[in-house]
Image 1: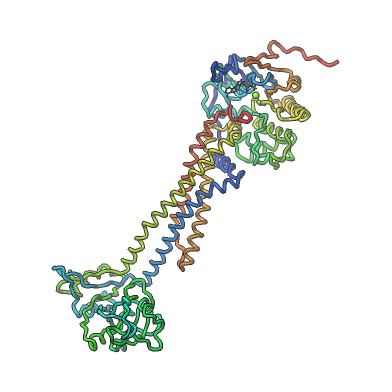
Image 2: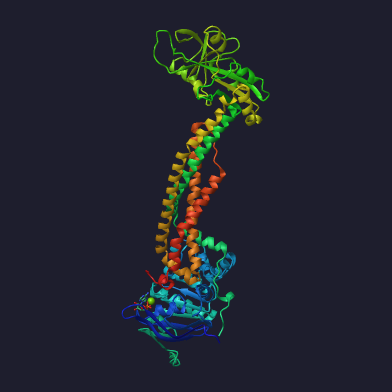
Length: 236
Length: 401
Ligand SMILES: Nc1ncnc2c1ncn2[C@@H]1O[C@H](COP(=O)(O)OP(=O)(O)O)[C@@H](O)[C@H]1O
Ligand SMILES: [Mg+2]
């Protein structure tokens, strides 16, 4: 099976005296259908890792393969094409376009694929259905609660049926009940719709619900999946 | 390992969506959009107004010239070979009337004489005296403000017809009631007052008397200082040399044939300098408008950093981002241009209306205005668009960048 994502010995240095080693020899593999949590303290390199996984950033050294495609030699158009075709992003601050209707925001997930508008809107409505916001399609984001906004962003990330959804602190701006709801939604999308999801979080409560966790510390990762996961304790 | 192929990995943005994304930014900030477009609007408006007013006035003048007839030629004595003032033969007007392409001809003779209101009046009014016959009104298409003109009946009587300016200076408003003027202490009865005449402003300052009266009673040589000739409209140029030869068969080179309407038409071109200056000012306004757009767009790029990051994450290429901002700037500017056209046409219309002209703005000027606005906007958008496209996407998606 082609991994959804593979990182091989990825290092990212930021310029400085001495250079900041934001990622240091990271190996990581995510298979289709997996859901993983990337955890670690603030400044440990989680966002850097996610940006590199999402081809928004390039590693200083090492390989990044997405859906089996080596990204090293790709130019801007092809890297952008990978993002439009195979990746979905969810951000802490939602990144919705405030002047656009909810359904148009979701349809933007397909904008850079060259799909015609009516098809985009049709699929956007289906995605809104999945996140339980079908009735808010014509609303504009300023009228939505934080949880609803993040659902819109989730719908936008999954509307293109990407090989991998990357979420950077998706519950970072939400209260705990809403966080719980959002996490449940993501778990449901993973379990019942086959979405492959990597969630960055420094919220341990969130992280603990996800069986596979990647711990990031000072740019190095420790994968709870390799060595094989510690058997989950089944409550009596 | 799967190899990337064009079809699976290239981003694509449909043409419609390119424009859609370019326009989406404008609607979300209508106030700013309008204010920014205003700079371009003022520039285009001033240029359209300058062109519109000048072409409306020109159209009006040309219409007036047409009405007066561009087939009027003036035959005057020029200079002799030795540089002396030449004279026209006395029978020049009669001879000219016999030319087949000549519809009619009339001679005028300048007479030196002081025109005053009465014999006790010695104010200088700066008026000239012209002797002519009854044909003058027809040939020059003169119109009377009141009374009658020199004609077959009156040309041998001691009567005078005043030009519009002459009447005003002599404070004679009406020919009825028998007003009189004196020319070198000889009394003349004023029988008519002319309307101002665009082609012959010198007639406005003249007092006309009958040629027969001047010759028979005042003993003045009817040495025509000019002969006005109406020629066949389709044969104007061909007639010119014939007129010179006919007026003075002995020395045709001592005859000047000119067309008064040419001089008037040339006057419209004198205003070209002023027009160019105003156009240049409009150009400066456009330039300032363009800089304003570039400025606002740079600010917009900074403000919309997270939108740019989002679009990059959604798969926009650098090219998609830059075209979005170029289109936005061009649209902003074109909006201003359209606004400016409206303002310019309205201003021209109001001015033309106040002058009693009809509106005449060349369509090319309007198209050029819109094209200029579009080009300026696209150019102004280039720098901010490049800035937007060069934003590091990883940086742009970070919170509070
Ligand atoms: N653009 C950058 N330039 C320089 N240093 C950076 C940049 N982005 C992140 N860093 C540094 O890299 C390290 C990892 O940052 P980040 O990936 O944002 O961590 P996290 O998301 O875990 O909080 C931090 O020390 C941060 O200061
Ligand atoms: Mg982070």
